[in-house]
Length: 199
Length: 199
DNA sequence: GCGCATGTTTGCAGTCTCTGCATATTTTCT
DNA sequence: AGAAAATATGCAGAGACTGCAAACATGCGC
Image 1 (spheres, rainbow over the protein chains, first blue to last red):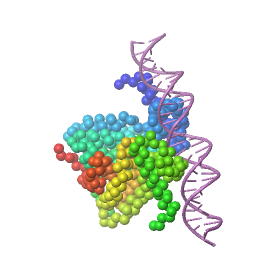
Image 2: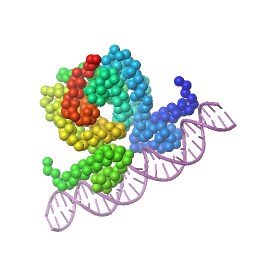
Image 3: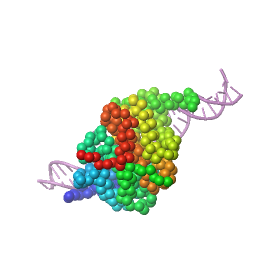
Image 4: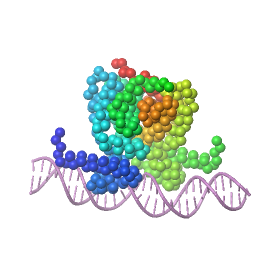
């Protein structure tokens, strides 16, 4: 787990660029912030910016590209006695706790995503990669074909819906409710099959 | 419902641009097709292209921006005796039938979306607008607050998942299964709460 | 039919994102 | 220290997109 100077610097630069992008865009708006501004704020050359992120939007969102793989690993580590939904709930719970711990970044992310539909699309794209891996894991776990059976692709998508809905309500409620609780509430609803609410 | 010459021409130009974009990108790939190429193919000036679509990606996807509103209207027209899920199922069924009728465009759209993650994000963004309106409708229908209660935002998102999953399986199965059937299958799964499949 | 009001198309100039390539700088390893 | 490898930077250029102003087409009242 040794991290040489080189590796540490890379992490620092990446974080600096992401935080600069997020903070500047949150304050001034997406169109009022250029890549040059972000690079200047992070004290690297504009050209270097593109060594770290393929686009301005990606820098603003700034999610770890390795994350989907770690998620898939976490799932594979769950005991095979669990049902797919149980395994997903467990992984989501850990995930939500980790996200809620980033008290600085996620509220800012959700703010800019809310203000700029283009960024919402990027964030969704980030989730999409996870969903694809998840569908494959589900198919393997249940012995079905990911491409043709309903459950893998649908449950993978629904899992994303649960998380997005929880994030949405987290922000709407001013971050007063705990994110893991909101996620759990979503799963309860999913497992209950969306019963009609009584009036 | 009268359409003057002016209005008809606009529709035709929009359709020509969309079809040119879709066809060219399907054949040559997103990066190998410039806006100038698309405009030339549709026989308008490059500048005119941007009178119709705000970006190249949007032209490739080419969904009607009015569609979310019509969807919301269709929902409001459902009898209030139906549960939210029943109403959504009914509207989805009609929707799926309409989409399956466009035997030219949807397969091409799904092909390019599959080949280019950036376009997948755009398509999802198009759906997102519908989901937002839907969440509001659900909240109004069930007398809850769209922002804070679970069901509106989650069910709106899940509805999108059902449709996306159905489209995915439609394409994976070579368009052999009817889209409405795939959508219905998804809803069955949702209503059943994703039971663990037996082995 | 004529001509004005309004909406649409086009060209032009300019900004910004993003890429390829060559060069300098930094870190690592021996 | 010095070679090897990774990283940072500068430069030039393609292509997306916008604002503006000038042509052009259409609709409408007369």
